[in-house]
Length: 208
Image (cartoon, rainbow, N blue to C red; front, side):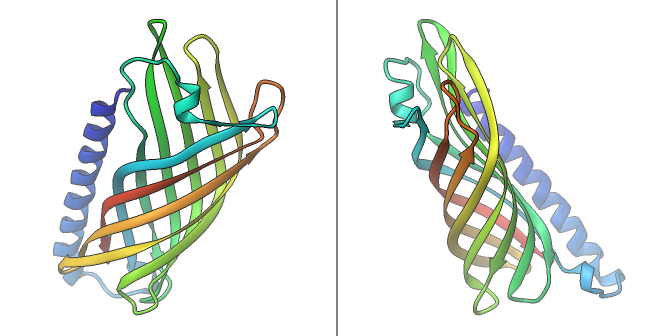
């Protein structure tokens, strides 16, 4: 999937989330309050940085892995979806799915480096709004496709991050987030031992 398709997909997902959140907000007056009625959902996109993996004891950046590639996309990060429940006005728990990817063509063949995270995450707002910190962990995977050979490896990762949620109207927020995650794999001569990447996201969050 090329860069424009990724951006279009995230934009479509964002519109769907906004529409769903708006419809929910319109109907919330008819719903009784309960612990599980307080939830959140969001998404984001932005540049990635520092994406690399360790293979056979050597650290290889995504740029190095795609050295000589044409039509390179640059390093793009997607905070595909965040969602879950608010245990309190300060504490959110749920799922965070994210990815960082860089694509290009090597000798006319499609090449791609990508890391995916599928994490359980906790987000804490010290003042119940505005600044937040978050962390999480769970399954991860990495795709290394040099245009000739493609390997996908699964493992486990951890996430730390922080940011700011700017309330723009009612329960709607624009978010600015900086994340760092690290992944560990069962390495071999053809599969990496570990990987890592950072990302800066501009996103949207709805808090019910």
